[in-house]
Length: 139
Image 1 (cartoon, one colour):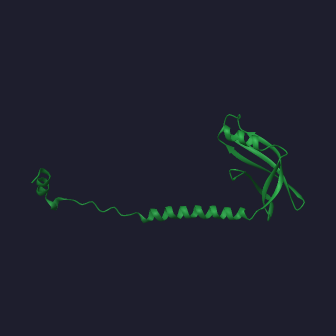
Image 2: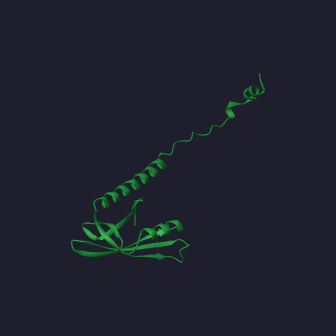
Image 3: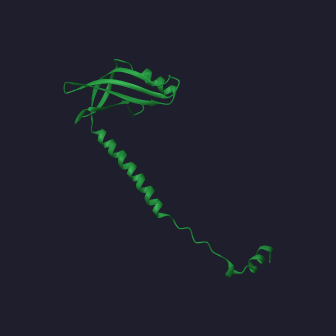
């Protein structure tokens, strides 16, 4: 017999305490599943809501940097107008900017007077958004 076997022979099994088996926490899994499914449902609902919106060409009426200075994070605001059924609407949208590179891209992309595709709610044309091409980000 080797040394390990001898020790096992000397153990009194009546004194050995067994730890209960760790049970799988189904309650925690249910909570996580509920949160995940809810988030997916909200995302799909939002997408379906705006997917039915119409598009029209608008014009950029102005852009503005909202921050302490352009080297610090802040916001980029785009103002635009568009017409639906002969009625002109105006809107401002805001994009928070973390990096100088992103700000430079927005400044070079959005110029006053340029055309811009505006997506609007046909049931309420005052609701609108614009999407920066290449990124599919809504502003």
